[in-house]
Length: 400
Length: 198
Image 1 (cartoon, rainbow over the protein chains, first blue to last red):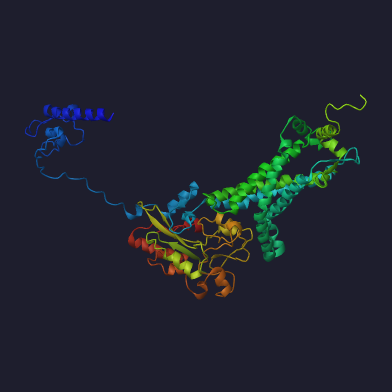
Image 2 (cartoon, helix red, strand yellow):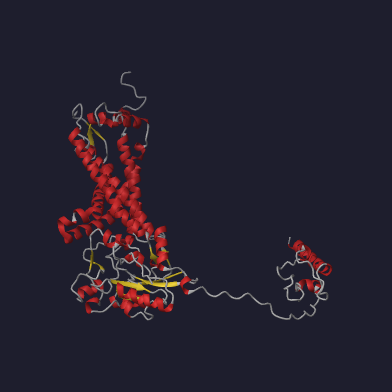
């Protein structure tokens, strides 16, 4: 390839002098002007082959004017040029007012675009290179207005709903009363893990609510010193309890994901509103559709809350800058208040809302009637399993 | 009462970083924190400018608006100061501040945030003026001694101006009229919702 191209180049170079000799006007014949518009006399370099209009002949391309060079012989004497080519005047520098951006304009422009003004700093803290970040204003709006409303409606609204539901429906009793016989619903590991997640969540939730609403609700009540202590220890607890909470979520996922895959029974459960408003109890396996929703809210929502929270515990982790931390805070806080609302409902139904429900996470032993009522399919499975242990498949009654 | 402000004349700032150093030395600012820094925009390109930036002591201060413990307060000269005794180091003021002024020493767990530190306009904090406690927490209190912030006082090109907003704006205006150019007062639109009209 290289050889072919060099051959072609040599052929072109050899052909060029011939063309120059035959077509291009020689300097010896100044009166015979070529037609500058004709394509066969136009030079490769624009402006070189044309007359400058001062009576001088058009300058030739030196390569074309010296055919000897192409053959490798020493170049002949180049004709002396009369005057150097005048160059275009160097444009005057722009006036100082037009140099670079004006502060007012740049700030206004960036603020409107939501972009930031950045530069270089010579100190080690490279994040200080952000001169102005207008996103802070949006975050302030989110924190002071949006989050207050979303959190207030979610948490306060859920509390009101639960109170209203309790007043209307009262405590949901077992329809057949207690049977006196119990069945193991959650073993020690499951309960211990549940309470690790639950207790961390309660402290995390309360300290989180304090940092969002405490300034308006708690600070006027207890004064700045006491409020500082509550908030300071709340922050430390919030940071530390993130770890058992996350660990508990992982264990929870491993323990219960098998029984929380949505299936056909969940459709019926939703159709009859879980039996909350009277009517027959829909059949359910180990977890009914409502519990599955709580499970996935906890695992997925809690996972996202935990992940975004770690970005906030470790400032400037990895490539994150201030705007990423603002985003992490938005995700963290919105999901958190929604989770708090969901968990309030979970706490209600697991404690005062339903007779016999608390035993599942208390002693782990639930009344058989309660279990049949709410998790009939699961009880059947457990009974079948128990029978397997007592009488393995293929075993025949004695004397058969 | 005066309305104390900062104004950085970016056409004069030569990025010598003396304001940064003077501030760190005057207040014995903790390791890793620079209350003031010099940012160079368009570095190496036409229109390069250096701006010395610290807390601008905003009119509608975002830090004070978002603080969960309400630890900020305003002096009679409208300086935005904070009480380190009620700061919990949550980081919210840093998220909200347009100028990146609040910073946190890495004293918390996992290198987390300690109590927030920022430019005090050399006015200390809520402690007794020029007491040892105030110096340890906030640095020296030059305002109480009748002096202006050190960064502006020792600026070699007088690019950084500190003082009453009306007066420093007038100084800047006269400069711009005399020399015929000026890129404006950096941060003023964001901090004070106004600009210096020449």
